[in-house]
Length: 478
Image 1 (tube, helix red, strand yellow):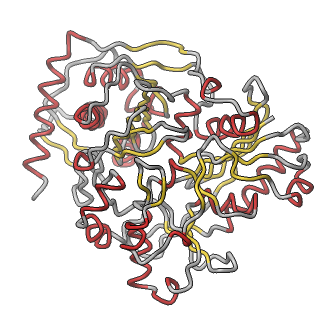
Image 2 (tube, helix red, strand yellow):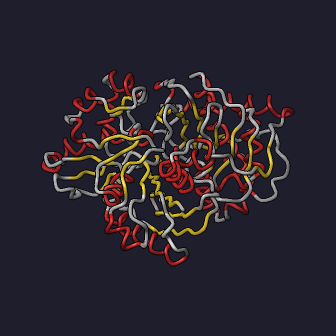
Image 3 (spheres, helix red, strand yellow):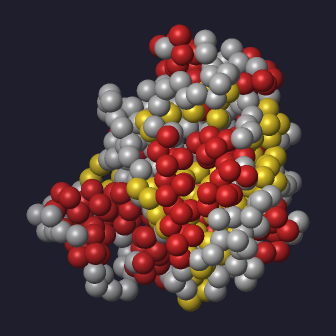
């Protein structure tokens, strides 16, 4: 058996699978985020340890864990967990969606070495600018830093008693040489840190160590359980969905939106705001276009109208050409392709006939065009996507998937019901590390149906996408 632990922002999820990858048990534990000031987002790392203990004990009540051979980890990326020389946490972890370090991010991004070596823009959400913010605003804490760990790697420290990270998560710090898959001494020095402040690195499918005997005894696990390197949340989700080879891709319609493509080559284009990271597998990379509001935009409209998202999108019928009404889904800024945290959402061309359902269609179409922007950005780097899995809560809407398939000119494959997320990917990585097996176990899920582009509407979607891009260009400076 193999355990996958997915440390999310709002919950920690644990699943247990067997050799056939059947899910035998699962359990989730809620986590709390604190926001002490506007734009701040923090979490107490002690929650992660308590949640892990609670989740694994819950698994043990469902299934005898004496056959467990491997544990894999996944976690929300970019968090700054700062430890002193005794591994004590110096302050709450600054999370991925914390925007306080925008000034520091701009400063680092102005140094051409960061884009050249890390392959990415230095976003305010990344780890390095957060630590520079601590240096500038909490110098007493900065002076005590002995190790900087990403969230899941602090959880790993609890499990194995050692400081270890893996490539996919480390790529989101702005300190990794993503081509060489190693820390960059130059980039660390630019933030007044050294390699000694960083954990050692392994590949996601390799062993990072073994579970501490005391925990194994407490949880009813055997001694010597391998803890795999694991992956950042999107890379682990890709392992769970079987998106592991060149040309494989997924569209994730969650709170935020992701267009993820696996690659066997490193081909960055930082200026496009495409994220180019190491994958959780050796000699593999991935690219992501990231939009900050996908189903979140629909939930916003739900709150505004007092109607549920399901009611707003029920019985939309077959796909229609986009209406004249435009929605720009930039409710909290945007990543790809604009890297514009200041932009905000817009409704355009409203009239007296615009009702809640028409507004809902415009929201679905606006998010669709944001994905089309991501697709264009990925194609500009040379990445070719021939088809993509459709994942996330928004994938329950056939209308939305038809719109995305048509706008991107890509068939979308909808899996049969099941869990193909980061927790399964983490468990698969645990299986790889424990058994010295490879990518062949990361298979695609069974496909329920494939939604093809509606070619009769392609030109209408292309024309409206052009209007959507023009609207952004006109409004971004207002």
